[in-house]
Image 1 (tube, one colour):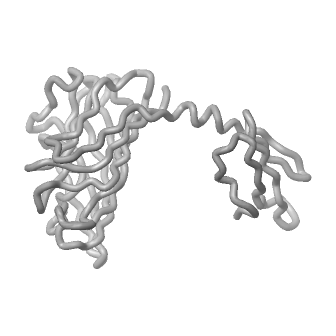
Image 2 (tube, helix red, strand yellow):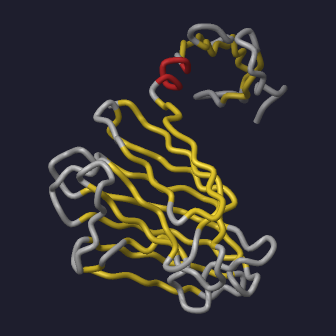
Image 3 (cartoon, helix red, strand yellow):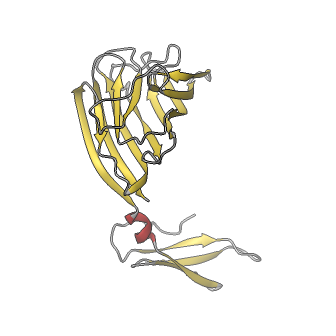
Length: 229
């Protein structure tokens, strides 16, 4: 609960939070912004350095796709141990599509597509309450969205997808893990929410990613962020 808004971009922005105590009623604590944001009330105070936390999370690249055959991010660096991709207003050019992910170990010169290169699972729920789990223990790619029966991605007005994909430790000598969360209107205009995860079934380092539709082209805004190691 906030007493007044504290979303100003100004470095001197202040505000207050209502904080519970061990005994007695909650008390208002004062926020004082600066190099380290301090939180204090009559019981004491603490300093939380949000600046350091924000510096560990960086925007690396932005791709605006318009009729693109694929969206790729290359040169994943060991500066970061976790990567996060934001999907905004993503839509296929063709109707009834599935969106996939593949990885590369040679910075995008080739993308792995062997019959047992990936494992994945996901569960989607539509606005009628129908739950549809899907998955594969050996596949040529990771299915990100649209694989659920009758819930493929559509190309009509408002039939877009937004959400995020997280990639964990892709440069480590272990299987690279992924998880994803999306919301979208499918080809029938029904609202869907979907969550899932997967893995590249190899200890080879992953240094590039490819996002694409089963057929046709892809549209939307994609942003790659990195969490510093």
